[in-house]
Each structure stands twice: as C-alpha cells, then as structure tokens.
Image (cartoon, rainbow, N blue to C red; front, side, top):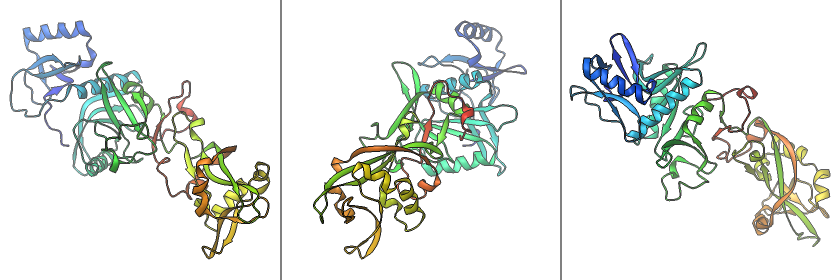
Length: 388
C-alpha cells in the first residue's frame, strides 16, 4: 500500500507545472505529444524520467515512461485507468478539487495511496480506491484503518465478488460494460454475504440489488445519496400478512399473522423490504408491548384475526407471544405456522416509524445492514444527512 512508482500515470511535470491527462481533449493530446517529441520537457513525477503519451485500448489517455528504467511497477489494467478517469472527471464536475494517484503518510507513519482524492474547503477529504486484483477482506479493514488515521474517508470500488458490507468500510463491486465502455457499480442486495459471494449464483438479483453507472454513483456519493441501513428512522408501510385456518378447539376459521413486512421498497426505490415474525418480539417486555400496541385486537378483529398476546403453551411449558383464535382465544401453536405459511398474503397495511424500537428485536439484520443509493430524481441531499 506504500507509495510505489507508477508506470502508467495521469500526471507528469512540465517544468514547475503539473499536467493531468484528463485535461486534454483528443486534439490537445496530439498537440502535447508533438511538442514533447520536439523538446522532451515532460517528466514523470515518480522519478523524473522522460515521458511518452499513450492511450489504452479503452481510450483513456495516460503518461508513461519513455524508456524502461528504475521504476518497476507493473501496468494498470485498462479498466482501472478508465474508472480512474471517470471518477476524477466526475469529482471535478461536482465542484470538488482532485488529486489523482494521491499518496501520503498516516499519523502512524504508514504510507497510503488512492486513485483519486477529492477535497473541498471546510470538509474532510474523500478518497476513491479502485481495487482490480483480489484482496482479502482483513486487508481491506487494515488499509481502511490507515486511511482513517490519516483523516480520509475512503470508498472502495472492487472487482471481486467478496466485499465487506459495513458502514466503517464502504465497499462496492465494480465491473466494466465492454459494449457501452462504461464502468458500473453494484450494491449488495438483501441476501448478499461475503462468505457466499463466490458461488455460481452469486451474480443473481438477490445478491446485487442496484447497478449504477460509475459517474452517477460518484456524484451521488459526494452529494449524500449513499446511505447505510436506509430503512432505519423512516416511516414505512407495515404489511400484515396472514393466513386462515381451522381452530383446533372450536373448529371455526381464524386468521393467523404469519409475517410482518416493513415495505421499504414502496418508500425508497430499490431498498430492501424487512420481514419479521411476531415471535421476534417475544421478550415478555418492550417487544411484546410494542407489537401489541401497534396491532391491537380492535385492528385485527375486522380481518378475522385474533389478538396477538402472550398465552400459556402446555407443549412448551411456558407462555409466549402468539396467535389466538378470534372466536375462542385458543392458542394457535407456532409449530404449525408452516402448514399455512404458503397461503399467507397481505391483509392490511399501516404506517409505522421503523426505528431502533423495532430493529433491536430483529435477529436477522441482513436486509437492513446494507448500503443503498438514493436514485430518486429531484431529491436533494438536504432531506437527510449524508452517511458516507
């Protein structure tokens, strides 16, 4: 991770002036090439060697060593240079200052390098790190700690399928669309887990939920459109999904609440819905009180559903939060839910504030603890504070 020499660079020196390859259009690039052939004034920033002007197979302009010398760094893939170009140009269009191939030292005297460093007056710098080769996740965490010690917020764009999913280390999958010659950023979906991200089905929609062109992604990230656990703190529709069965005691039909679906996708485009069971709130305290106050008997009864409340189970030898018959209030055992689960469907919906009161009772947070890109047109970052 140290600041090693760069064989293919976006910058070079012309006397006391630093030149960036992204500042030149096609004609300006050819004019610069002609002038450099004549007077040889361009020098590599890493070692002072003479420069030659080149272009990758994907059309990205860059500076390279005119002759092989002491710099031993290997060439970057054309896709990495294209991504670096798209990031740098987007950052600049967004009104931020850029430093390409930036390097420095953290407070712990560890060296670091990033592809593009974005900065503006009054704010912390934001770095973009393009990782095309495979990197173990523990190494990502270690590098992220170095960036943090240097006071830099760093966003990772990684080619590999196994990436960290955590607020402290924002990481996303980067791919190249050959036909369109663009880079695309993919965000992990509700069923994504790094440990299972190398299977044959790991490219499916359950694993990767949002796919965003790199330039639009960078602009949105700098503008506060990138959020972690976006459902939390929002008012969401709560769909109550129920199925109907015959009560074992009175033989009459009664409804059972099978699933509770916090339908975030209806409020936040492409955000994951969060599903829970009534048993997730069976703590004989705040959880049961929260659910019973949200779904009181008077709300359930018109739909043919009995009260949700603690009932004593002779099978389990203890009370638990349960469904009951709307006619005789007999406990409808949770071990039989699977017999009618396939018939469950949304019966009614209410709006609830999905805050920590709800989240703290959920054992499965896979759908919650994910990044989400706010791709809604016309929405400003001022509506919510940026998280990334």
